[in-house]
Image (cartoon, rainbow, N blue to C red; front, top):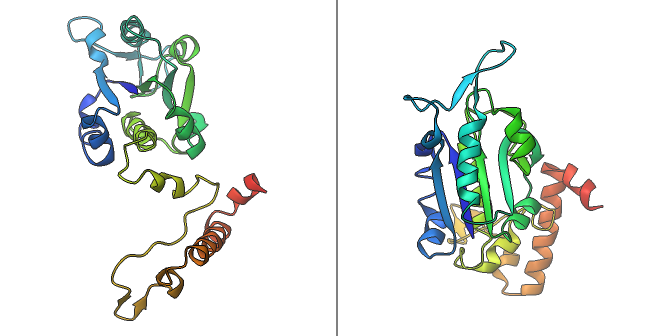
Length: 227
């Protein structure tokens, strides 16, 4: 899989994409992630990538030309399944979307900045818009890193135990059950006996019960989608 990320602040993506599961997946050759500086196609001697908004609104807007030129360069080398703009008014990111995107071969993630991007980019270049929540951050770099992480961990071989992703929260529409590790008794705080029983059937039944209970208590709206 290949992920190309377009940004005006590439330094923001250095650390999130270099360590842990994503970093290991890149080193193992399971995913290729390339971060592109849009200033390569910036306008004028100062390589400007933004300009004032028509209509006089406050804030600068990312220009169409640098984005178009960068996407043209990339598309000349390969076809892309999706060109995704990280936007607060896009479809809300869910585990189902991450699952879907993990099956793609090539995707582009476009990071907005400043006041946003020229609407013509959204109308003529972007194929999909994704939001990581109902709030606004300074740019699309952190959301893009978040989306990339949620995708890469699902690629076969990215996790040391591939079955681990199957028990993540939201994979079956429910939150994950509580998890414990050694010691079994810490200052009187004990691991539930069923987890020490060695009985897979009882353990699974307990986990299913706990997942449902936690979802009812913490995220009841998720149950509406299931039932």
